[in-house]
Image (cartoon, rainbow, N blue to C red; front, side):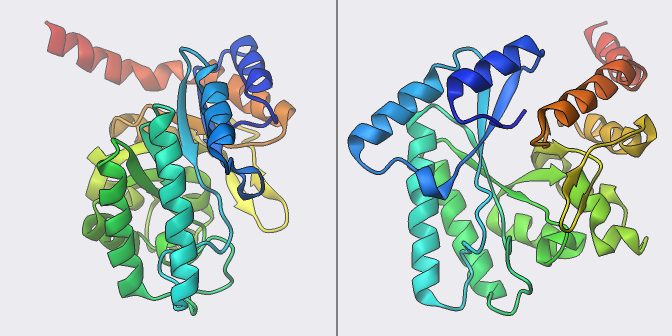
Length: 266
């Protein structure tokens, strides 16, 4: 689940009560720790989550590594490098970022600058044992599987496959591509998945009301070995309803994978 509450203590209590195994911690630019004392307190708070695995997410609007404005690029690099250092100190190993989030078009962005700076950021994080993962969006370069593939291949980034963004993208809506095309070229690099039905402008992430809304996409995640699924829904009731839907129906999808594991053991 996401960190839908303000404190780590509240998040942990809700997660354990409702059977979640991990937390996808989204940073808020307005409350990032600044001083060494604040950083130490934040790291202590995150480590209080104990045995629960925590991965990290930067849903920052209009913070782009490939902006045409060098000052904007410097600002983005400073923010991401600072967060990578925080994640590393907290013992985190995965950080998800975006390209183009909050922009209405890719006009202010440079493709070459984006790929070069993303590659450099991936290397910076790797030196600190953190894997930077690029998330596909519902619009823009990362909403097109062919361009998404190039960004992953040229930068060496991991993948966070957002199945709601994929479903909502024009590439899939037009049936020119399928959701699987966001994963197939780099299946072994899909480390995280964001799970919900679809994203609707003005309404946000919409939860599935029926199992067949997400069944095929979850089967895809299993087939490529991606087992870190974040139900990316903010509202507690809808979050829990989606978890129940998955828990009640996932079993039959797991059977082929369990059979394969038994064969390997045999």
